[in-house]
Image (cartoon, one colour):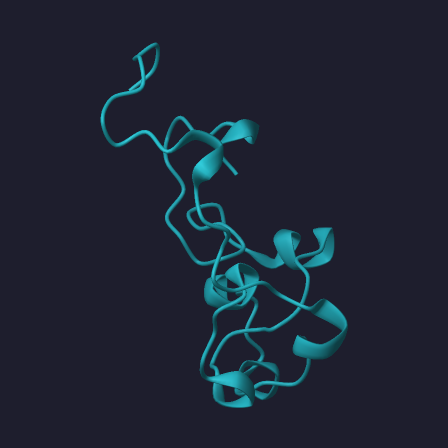
Length: 91
């Protein structure tokens, strides 16, 4: 995918804006994940599109270093599998 010239599907700056966006002060808060002691942040919340709200089994908050330290070595803060060649620029 790298070093390719734009083709017929290239939209450049004409791309449409994201349909959802998170408002941290309004959207973060208590979820079922808090009561269950979850250490995984909801990836849909981070993308601004979690439809479960307070019924979500994951955390609705900004990821912090303390939360990241609670994760095991095989998953990241969003519960995704880490790869053997995980690098800091992978997100």
